[in-house]
Image 1: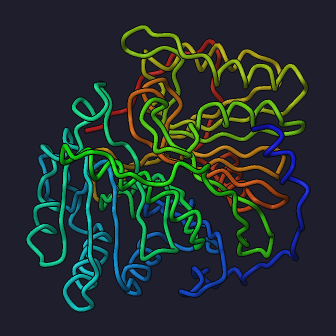
Image 2 (image 1 turned 135 degrees about the vertical axis):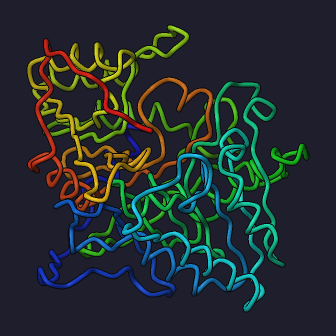
Length: 423
């Protein structure tokens, strides 16, 4: 893997493209050119919006509206305001998910697109409304995925991604939850590249079959593609699909954990990580120090290691390990706390939820896993690794906005913390 990364890092660097500050960036319209575009969500009433990065609810609806033949959607859960017992918020808060759902229904009903929707079985029992609503439409089929049955594990379908036709896909931290599109800080990538889309569909097709108790599809066992894409800034980089859990991957799709570790081990100058949560042991007391050790090794080499985690990580499961890591010279951790909405408390919202890693301004991992054992060994997650000068440009801008912003405070290695209210 290191040879694979190092081989692609010294690629072409395009000119820097900056939009005027008053302009809102847009994702490229549908076409044949291979592209990679960062897409964000940001909490209302905060300063976390980057105008040069397109907004997820706008991009998602545009992509659904141009879908032709098929749409595949996988998400941990789906939720509109009022769904479930805790999917509520102030009356003034905008629902940005329903227009996207309506676009999916139009694609099936008006244009005949075949739509498959996959949700985690455990969370679907809490939020059953959207999958049921979608399933009632002609041309849309929904299934729930039970990791206990499919993997024999206590995990979940934690992945959040969608594919449109045969060439376009999105991977990011956003669940299909109204809060993820307007009350949570999130980051993802929209990629147009047929070979990479085909690899991600291998994951979806496997899980679609497992969800129904069917035999896995007899697909190709050739290694996944490493393919060129062009960023909005004009940088040509290479990318490939990765996934978890280790023991339940389609043939040819690599496990993400060792590749993330090798990215950190290859870093010479900087490592930036942003996560919702971080852990070195899980609730079953199983040790998971692969990533922790890699970050410590990087600091020993003189690499500047910076990590952002949400204040949800100040729980008794995560805090001791974060404070231990923060004691290492060369490692700084900042904890973010996003203020409550002026209209009142919103359950499971107002939090940093993005999941990505950048190294040396030349390598990027962006995916759906927080960094603890179950995400890599028990649960379905997906990600994308990109290599080449400029690959993480917008991710680093996203990182720096939070790092330098008013909601981040440096973690005190000896401090006392109380986890925030979640619901």
